[in-house]
Length: 114
Image (cartoon, rainbow, N blue to C red; front, side, top):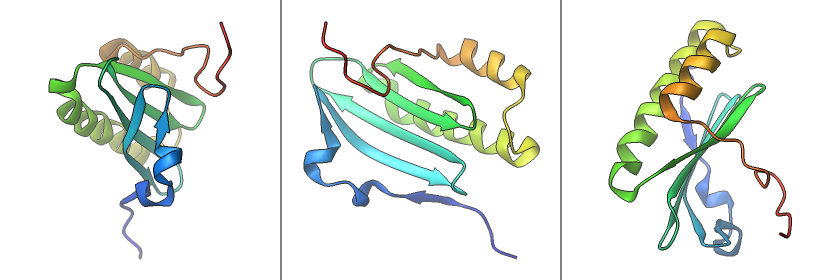
């Protein structure tokens, strides 16, 4: 039986791909090809945690000081829910979104000019 684990796939992105607007991709991890979690840093904007889990995805904005701790907390919560249910339950989605202040900005997938 193969043990599932988080895989750091940051190295699969070129340095140019890791830069977007004022953001820089610090780390991108994937769990069992079902969960994706990324941390973006910025010198001028809030840090961002992007996550994708089934039909649930979004961005959590945070300050530099709490970024790594929050990233690890979110990672553990997503993994636990996945291990228990495979797909995110409605209860999990609602509680997670409220607890972490999940946002779904207009440009999450595409950069629309203003």
